[in-house]
Each structure stands twice: as C-alpha cells, then as structure tokens.
Image 1: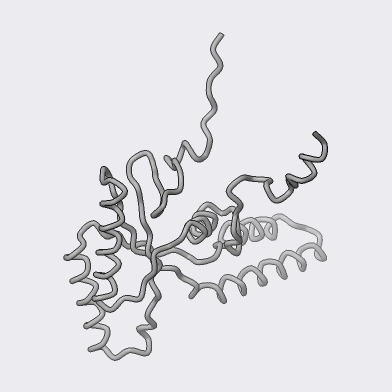
Image 2 (image 1 turned 30 degrees about the vertical axis):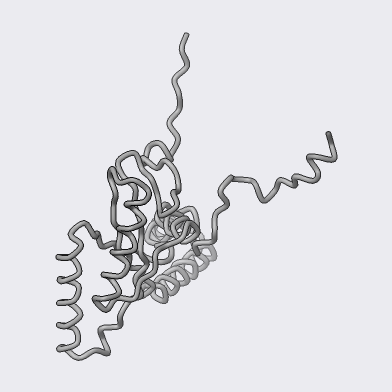
Length: 194
C-alpha cells in the first residue's frame, strides 16, 4: 500500500527556496526592490506628469519589471465582517456593547493603517545563471535610480516580512525564523544531554 505524500503550503504556492538575490519558485527566480513612495498630494500636476513619464520610460527600458502594491500591515476586513455578523446575532446587550467596541477599534486601526502601503518592483529570471542574475539586478537597480525612483533590493528578511503579511501569518510583519520553533531550541542543552 503506497502512502500519499502530503502537499505543504510551500509546495502548493510553488515556493522552493530563498536565493542569494530573492526567491526561487517552481517557475522562476524573483528579485524584489522596495520603492520609497512619493506623496503626490503635495506635488504640482507638472511634477506628477514628470513622475509618470519617468515610470513609463523605466517600464519601457526594463519591460520585465513588474509593479506590486501591498498593504504594509494586515487587513482587518475578515475580522470586521465576523464581528458585524456576531453583532447581528447577539441578544445580550453587554456582549453587544463589547462587540461594538471591538468593531470600532478594528475600524480605527484600519483607518490609521490605510495609508500604509508598500510598493515593489519585481523582476523574474527564468533560466539565467547566477552571474547573469547578479549583473541584471545591478543594471536594473541603476536604471531604477536613473529614472528618479528611490528603491533598494529587498533582503531575505524583507521578503520574509512581505510574505508573512501577504499570507496573514503576521499582523505587524515580525520577522519569521527560518525554522519554526528554532527560537525554543537551545543547542547547549541538547549537547549536555548527550
């Protein structure tokens, strides 16, 4: 009798490993650049037009560059929906007041964080060798800078934080260890037992 091998979340989303420059999936390697956002509400329309033109030029020079806009903190919509549903079903007035306070608190947090966005440039490499990836990343980094965007290549810790927020495993984006539970394991204690 053969046992079915269980799929891990990592396998289901195609994630293979972190690489020197980003993330390797089953289809490609990705490098990410965190872009410092520009507050266009304080810019003149001419300055905004110039910024848009620079972005168009950047995308024409690096056609494989992808744009990603993410919340830089967790979204509370499903939590608010749950509390709203509980409110409609709850009969006890004291519990209803607590639920209303929870809902207002979640709404307040979401409002405060609504402007907390993270903007990324991503580039995928399909069959390039490590040296080619290194050269392309440096060239893309320079091109991004030459077109007036302040961006830095994301480190492993930055990428882990982004993935933790995206997959909802961290509300604040706290750093996730490489091995789950490694912070509870003391190697010295293990060696003493031997």
